[in-house]
Image 1 (cartoon, rainbow, N blue to C red):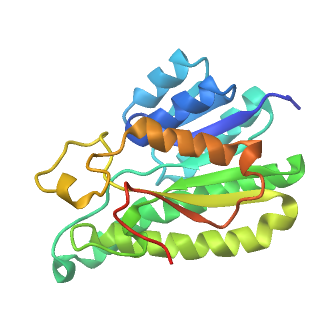
Image 2: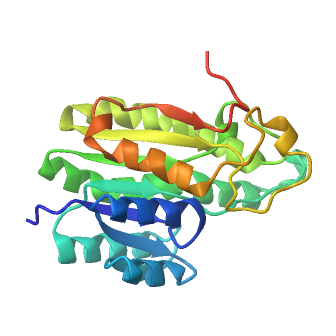
Length: 234
């Protein structure tokens, strides 16, 4: 088995996922990227890594990603679960199909690859799983209903997973970004942010890299707010 450190990034073709992939590569990780747009393959090639075009909502595509990663490097040390965008709209106007879609985008996007990589990490003696969630996981916003509901559920899943797999030295943590400059700025949002600006995707990537590092070896089951001060923990 290779001694190289290997990281998988899902939904890594653009935005925070792509920034995380670039940062981890700069830190010495071999990188495998899953992206539905094809941008992930191009980014992975530029980083000397492995790119797969597919969806993090497809069990087959995820299995193909993990299998190809193992074929190439023989291990998975870090899994970064990024996500696309789920349904939005007035709360009671959302259909059953919208809620199901939200679960796919914001919750099962983590559960499915976690099932695949956990046995690998157990055999290796450890690993780190990092989920890019949202500042609205605990203080939900009407503008992001499916995200708030299912990422609140993700926080519960993360605690359950961390309790169960800590003895195997597998850590799972969530990053809760606020408004990040990988998306266009909207009127009035800046006024809500105590730091007075949108966050940078590279700032989220730096937190990903820390949680993937040995320096975070005693951190698991946590939800780290990286939102410019919009929300507070007690």
